[in-house]
Length: 219
Image (cartoon, rainbow, N blue to C red; front, side, top):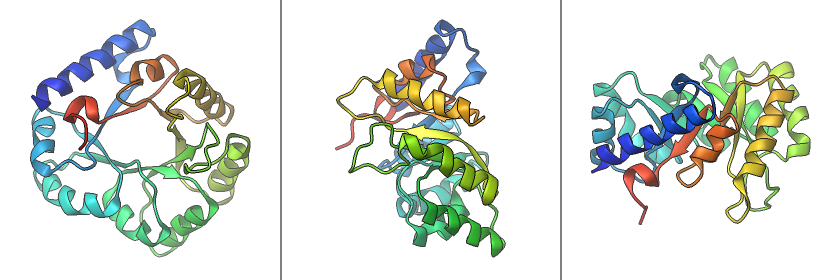
């Protein structure tokens, strides 16, 4: 059942890319495995998929080390907020951190690098809807934050990520994120989830984060 849902999502992604005049290799699926057990993740791994997203460092640490023993080519993304006291644990596990969202966290990465840690690929999370309860850099502060991270701190920032407000048209937010990325010469766009990933692909998403359409609705 999970494998079938996974293949259906993959088919929808390929169709959306084709309709947008893009190639299948232009975007990748991040299978969002947060709250899922190792047993529910394994059918997707067995189907050949290797890119997964987790929200919490501690939860990921509990299930992914053993899964990676069997599937060493997994690419793991952190798509939830990162506390500075969890940076060391995150660097030991994740290949991509999509939630760089504040100066304090940027400096924590620098300190870890100075101590010998290798940094993963980084995306800046943008709060495109300026929602007070949501993490992310405000759109009018993005250029300065990218300049700080990339130019002053030499962090490996590759792109941007956003989570549009639930009640708003996502296309407006995807268009804004694409504009901000293009203006700053960033090639990676993580945007679009189960309900709107086809729209995100129209606007240039290179990663779409899909969980419930693959694993079912969370309890």
